[in-house]
Length: 86
Image (tube, rainbow, N blue to C red; front, side):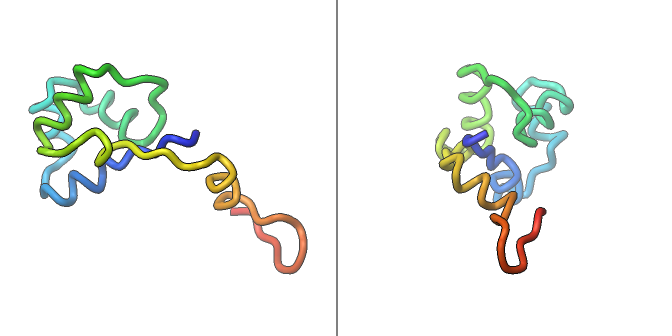
């Protein structure tokens, strides 16, 4: 998926645990993990706003777009010299 979630980065900058963030935002740690690990299909604006408020950041600090070709290139080197599948 071309959307990358950078919640881990903000958690590290704020020296906050996943559990603390989940409590302060009002979502379960399991749902936060789904979002944090990029497995979420959607996020409500209210949840995104709460994350931004608690982490004192902008939505762009938590979410970023990457071209699919770049994401695919990271996962697979085309056949040829020393090609590897990661």
